[in-house]
Amino acid sequence: MTSPRPSAARDKTDDSLREERDKTDLAIAEGRDLVQESADEVLKRAREEADAVLEEARRKADQLLKESAGTVSATTVVAMERKVEDATVRADRETADQTLEFERVETARVLARLLPVEREETDGRLQAERVQSDGALANRDDFLGVVAHDLRDLVSGIAMSGAAIAHISRNTEQAAQIGSAVSRIHRLSVRASRLIGDLIDVASIDAGRLAIVKDPGDLQALLAEVADEFRQSAAVKGIDLSVENTGALPARFDHARMVQVLGNLVVNAIRFSPRDGRIVLRAERAGDDVRCSVADAGPGIPADQLEKVFERFVQVNNDDRRGLGLGLFIAKRIVEGHSGRIWAESTPGQGTTVLFTIPI
Image (cartoon, rainbow, N blue to C red; front, side, top):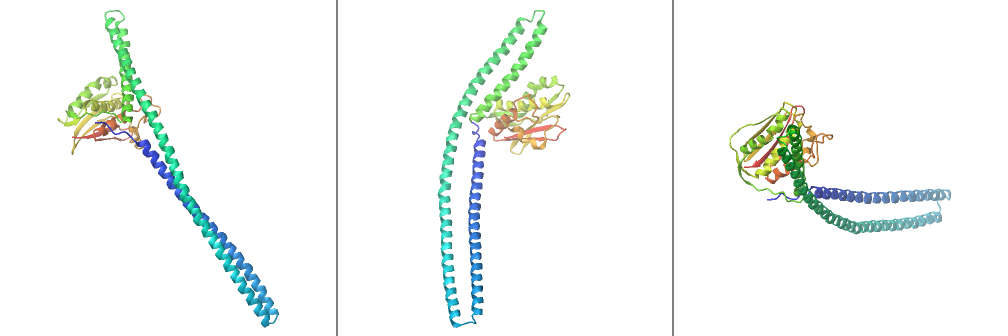
């Protein structure tokens, strides 16, 4: 079983594109409405001015008619002039209305033809960029995988050479000094190997090739195994690493991957726990799931960071350089590969508990 290839970046791009298109459509609609409103306003003002001119002309005509004592000839002339003027105004207004309507229809037609062409061109450029990006990512992942495997072999060789030096010098006067240096080489080699493993897993996750092979197992026994592996590392800081025994908890899971998940959680707990602190591992039934948790007494995580800590390359403290910020990201992908979920609960100053569930 492999975890699905993540498409968060593409989904985000598509969402952004849809938002921009909605904004464009809205802007075009608002622009069209504004043009129509402006045209209507211009036409309204022109008509008002024409009416004012006509009204003034009629006022003068009425004044002239009054001065001429209302003769039949003057009245007839004024009536005929007004009839001609009214007909002229109506004709001009009809022509203006027809011209304005034609311009509106033509503008809408041009916009209707232009928008699909622009979108088709945008989609074409986006598809080309995606093809190019996919190729670049594939080359990067392949290169990263090859280099990471080679680096892991080199680190393993360094650790083996250090062990050989310690064995050869065990009966010499400098045995204690050499043994201390070799122990340091071993610790650094283990740390480097873990970081390389994280990089390999990230490449596998990005390529959709993170293998999850489920077999029957006991999660309670798994907790005890992980605690035994990291108890000495915790003891160096005086930290008490314990497991609450709730009885056997059978489930189907990938043993190696679950060790990796719990190991990452325990390493984080040791890293951020104060000296002489306490870390507790626990597993229990929760309906149709098994829920596991790793609780520490560290400084805690701010509420706005509880979800972000599961993103890649994220550190709660930006100045912290004790890791790459990949452990929780990888743990989340592995748990999701088991059809489970993972989250963190924390109160600043009172520690953090990371929990995850997987179906029984």
